[in-house]
Image 1 (cartoon, rainbow, N blue to C red):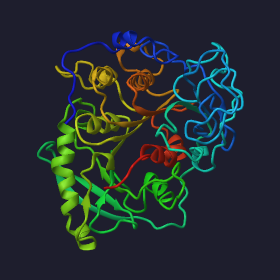
Image 2 (cartoon, rainbow, N blue to C red):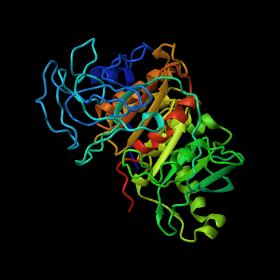
Image 3 (cartoon, rainbow, N blue to C red):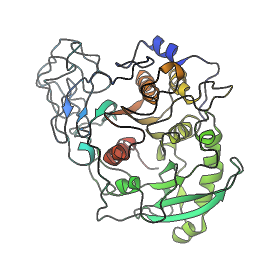
Length: 425
């Protein structure tokens, strides 16, 4: 189990000590987006990489920030790409398109604006890009990105094998107060008797018929041979909240982790209908094969599964990393997660995706109230960056809270990034 932090330090003071990690004001009262740095990728456009030769996502017009590299220097022509792929032909600003833009000249498109680093692939949200033929360093898609509207549309159902759906009711001793439906999707590619990688979906009130969009997005990419878009066949476990959603989700503690590990997962593993179809069915105990997804208050619940439990892959849309449930141990609730991240040594082995809308909840409120979702998520991204985590942060221009179009547009790319590097037992 991962340890929490004893004592309390304000996020603002912790970020101040970190030196102002994110342009645009992590820990400040500003709600304006960070100044775009790097080149703009639109679908299949060329992405500038500045000096490393590693391409980054073209998320439907994503602005790829850049970092590293000496300001005003020119990398040697033909220098090898980080992944052994494309050579850099020029790059007056230096730095690769990753992170938050510290190389190059202030006030301009910093970080390798003239360097050529390959092209993005096509597909959902512009694709993850190509990486050449060398060893994959695991950083493709890491960093801070801005995506642009339009966000309309739904995930298309394609002619691929679709998962089998199972549902049962459960009651909880940890969270008493009625029963809740647990819905499980098992991919057709699952081989009975093997350890199944899986993802917990918070707020999992699955529809009575059909597959939710996130399941469909994953199914569309199970056949992919390209490592940048491939998603391993996943078991989806949809878990709705009980009668006190905020208390269950927004409280920073290991209680939700205990609920999932000791109550939900054993019931999934032993479910009679699942066992009738797959007698040897079992969910993996390998932390790298365990993921959690949340939107809004579901996000701190998902984060808690990583922080206090053994889930290494976390996906958050419009995460409520603000002060909603305050306790004696955590007087600012989930607003404290950035401080906790920066205080944890060595860093936890987590891979974390974050998204927030430009006009998300509380975006015009002062940070002193600890109820600004935009600042809360920027603080998360800055802390993860400082501590060297694999993280991916999307700032959705013009978007509000948990906007459906943003999720539809990015689900497949997000899942592919979140599961990069996964190797089954």
